[in-house]
Each structure stands twice: as structure tokens, then as C-alpha cells.
Amino acid sequence: MSDPKQGFDLKRALPLIAILAVAVLGFIFLRDYLTFDTLRENREALIAWRDANYVLAAGVYVVAYIVVVAFSLPGAAIMTLTGGFLFGLVGGVLLSVTGATIGAIAIFLAAKAGLGETLAAKMDASGGTVAKMKKALNENEISVLFLMRLVPAIPFFAANLIPALVGVKLRNYAFTTFFGIMPGSVVYTWVGVGLGEVFARGESPNLGIIFEPHIIGPILGLCALAALPIVIKAIRGKSALPVEE
Image (cartoon, rainbow, N blue to C red; front, side, top):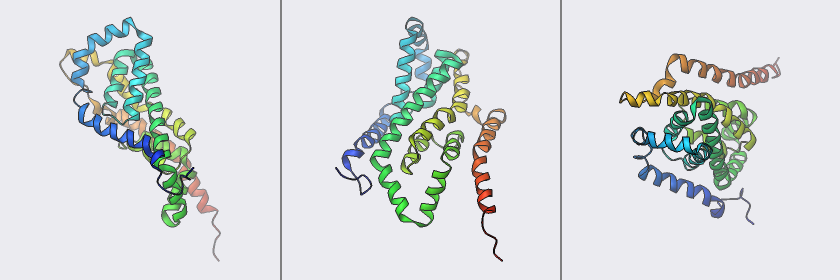
């Protein structure tokens, strides 16, 4: 058996290659289907199906969310809105966060097996600035991962892949994913709860609401809280340095 740290292993990379291939195909063929118009046109059928098969509908929704995230398909925002539309705020948040976390773990494991272990080993062996940056990240995994999830400007697929490529621990990744995406999920699920009225007016939901001051303010506060351990550790590190005479 080949050592994954010694070089590229095609067999280990196959899951990641498959994910990337499906992601490209999904972007080409599905982007016109996972839209507000599709949800608007099928909302009555979806509500009727949910009312007749609530548990099944919830399960199918979670599986669909897992597939969307694991294969980086377009439509994650639509999926979150749909969760609020069909299952309410609490149910929608729990189902969407669960599906997104499982999907993120799937792509994390595929990326880590395919490239992450090899790349992380090369970073450690390279020395210099790259190795120091990786070491700093690994020493502050929880804080950095929370920041990657909380900052709205970081694409979700990037926050899924980058940690795998620098060798973060799976348990930290899963923990910070579940709780780190929750604030944003609450916002979009909340918007989804009111979709019925939005569609009735012939309008589209405002996804830019997350950047409104009363929404982004608390999220930035959480970002500051997540960054606090990094700042404290940096200050302590400086104070521990020997003073030259």
C-alpha cells in the first residue's frame, strides 16, 4: 500500500475527482432548476407532499441538502430558504444545518484523502513561512474554522475544502461547521418562513438581508469573539519572549 504522504495517489483521489466532475456537471445542467422560480411554481405541490409525508419529506430534504453540499452543486441558499418555507424556523434550521454539516464532512474527507494528507505533509516539510502559517492555523483550529464559517464573504465550498488541505482535525471541522453555519442558516431560514407572502406579491426574497446592519452586526460580533483566543495567544506569545539587554 502506498503512503499517501509520498505523492499523488489516484485511487485515493477518485472520490474528490468524482465530486469535482459532478460539481461541474451540476453547474452546467442544474443551475436553471434550483431557482426561486422553480420553488414558486412548485410550492403548492411541495406543501401538499410535506403535509401528507412529513417525516419522509424531512428525510428527503436532509439527503438533498447533503448531496448539494457534498457535490458543491448550485442552490444551497435555495435549499435553506426551502427549509424555512416547508418546516418553519426551528425545524428548517436544524434540518438544513444537519444536511449541510454532513455534506461538508463528506467533501472534507474526500479532499483530505485525495490531496490533503499529501499537501499537509509537504507544507510541514517545506519549512519557512508556509510551514509557520500552517502551524499557526493548526494551533488555533477552532477559532480559525469558526471565522471561516462566520464571515459571509468566504464561499461555503472554499470553507469546506481549505481545512482539508491544511490537515485540520475532523472533530474540530465538524464542530465548527455545525455551529459556525448556524447564524447564517437562521437568517436565511427566517427569510424562507415568509416566502409564501413574498411569492404572493410576485417578488423575490432579499438574500442581501444578511448584510443589513442589524444582521451583520451580531455576526461580526461572533467573529470578534472567535478571533479573541488568537489575539490573546499572540499577546501572551510576545510577552513570553526574552528581553534583550
